[in-house]
Image (spheres, rainbow, N blue to C red):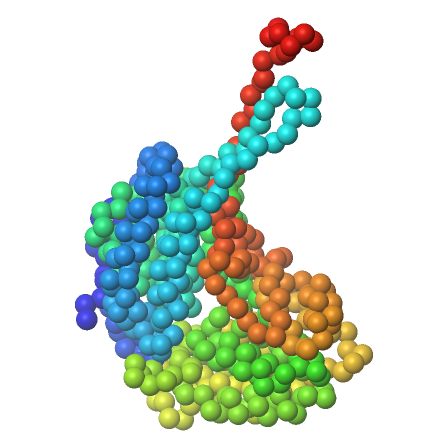
Length: 486
């Protein structure tokens, strides 16, 4: 299979003088070397998007919908190709690449329909002397910085609403996973998408990436990434007034009460924590378990961890793949070692599986007796580590769950008591509260609060991150007391 190497810049597929090697983290083998934008090429992308805005923003909704449906058809026709790109660049199991692919397909369909449901609206005038209407308009050029954990899903969450809203978008994929994004660039080129509407460029240096956010051309900066990266982009973007839409890090708590369905809680939490090697922004990082169900929960979690299939085999039913790189492996290993040194019990995993000699794998890991002195309690692991913290009836649970500046994205509650569930849903300072399960879809808002972000991915709310509201007010002809026009 020949993988894409060229960036999609100003309506063309381009090679470049600067390049970036991409490695498969499951095999530690080179996959392909891709072109990257630097200096003048970054400026060219920005200028091209700026020049595309007047035409694309005034293109009718029907025409924008037609382009989105045309791209979606090309995406569907190239499903195996796109999924293979993810399979190689992330070391994901073949089955788990389906979610990435479906997200792109569904986003293009959903936002092509949703933009037609968005209506301008009128405002009442108290004296009756004027009429007013609020009009939605495209905000301007958007720049999207993507994380590597879901290469196509993250791209899907940005390209759909931007195209629908009428905003030219420059997509900067992660340097770890640019291949599938470049494949989408090939498809945009194949359908003849108007120049500058979508551009997909990786940048080898931080300085070149900063050119995108520091430019005064973008009206919207959007990111899926860490809180630290979000703060950096807001700092560099302060050269002009911009809109921000950011889905950032979290230190997600899960509360498992004594009346919870323990099997359901374990299956849900281990499912989210061990799939994609725990590299999911909504993965539970701290699992608070009531002492009355602690032994049962812990035993079942350990069984899940030890029963997981770790590896990279297209034909196998893989539970857990590799971490994205050696740095991520070492970081997670350090979190485990620090916890054990400070008194946590390592019940499963904690290191590379003995059966695998290559790849950045960490076996699904269960730590018991975790407390707030440990780094794994304070820091989002972004790895397959379940940290179990026991609690009692008198534990200040909501206060503990809300503790930490990286919180604010997702929290989980497991209880059969609906009143208790709603009580904690009101106390937890997180953008999403998942009760007795987990559900995500393109039509459901996804976003954090506080240090976990601003704005939303998915749902109609995402469109508003790419739109601005304009008030149009018109004076009515004055009317005399007799009813005649004055």
